[in-house]
Image (cartoon, rainbow, N blue to C red; front, side, top):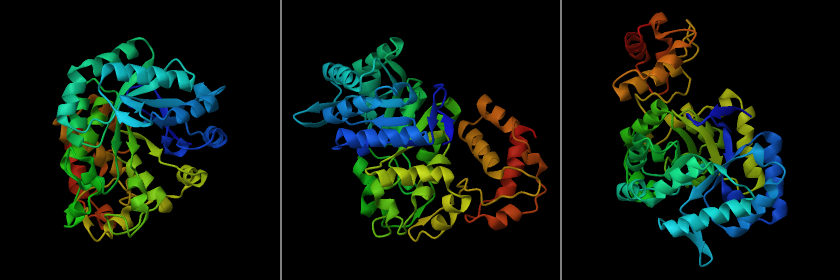
Length: 382
């Protein structure tokens, strides 16, 4: 298992994380089996959006004796009322729900306290200027929350949260279909067939700006909906019109700026094992470029996907990384110090490009790689 720094939090999370769907409705024995598999394979990050009391209790029992091996991304503002899940901004309910969560999990803290499901600008303002954020900061100061996170499907609301400086971690829906959709406060628009009826071209600029802002500010991203609820794995259900593999979906998410971990929505042991198998997958099995280039309803022409098909460079330049760093500087209008540092440790710089054009011939998306290398050499001075 490979681990990544989760932004500036100091946490190292496994590239493959576990969504709580796999624990819902499962008896204790199956929850323990999931946890055993995760411990065995090094999966250390668990998202806990659901307030289901049975799930929390079973997971708490399964964590006994190994709590320190796992990073819990536990959600605030999600409570259990009338036998079902409820999202809330009522402080009394938020506090009650958080205390219940800690008690049932058998712990006195969680590594990530995720403010749950902020999908509108109005809701973000309520959270930011109200009691919820104040409470989250109090819990962080008290050591009961290691860092503050927020989950969202709307790049506009998410970007506002990241730019505020109040959020350390962002849980966001990342996949190659949702990434083409413009900001919308209605989450159902992401899987509405009507929104994929016409030809979609390249990533929505708000989404790209969000990922790049997270990278430059050190806000780590944990990914939800990497498989689009499973739709992307089936040609007849995928908005793209072709089926992708588990490895392709995970690799796409992990090659976005700032992404640290993909929360696998594993409902069975087979699902979990399929996601974990990504770690041993070959470059060919991970490669999504050919599949993306053949999507009948979507075009990525001219847009660098960081897929790596430009390699190998005869001068050894890591073209995908150079391009990613260049895009980050363009988005910021300056060269952030962290980006300069990452560029500086590259073994070969853009200035070494001999403009042979071999990379452009291999690019499935027609990216002007040579021009990008020229720009990068100017921006970074080498």
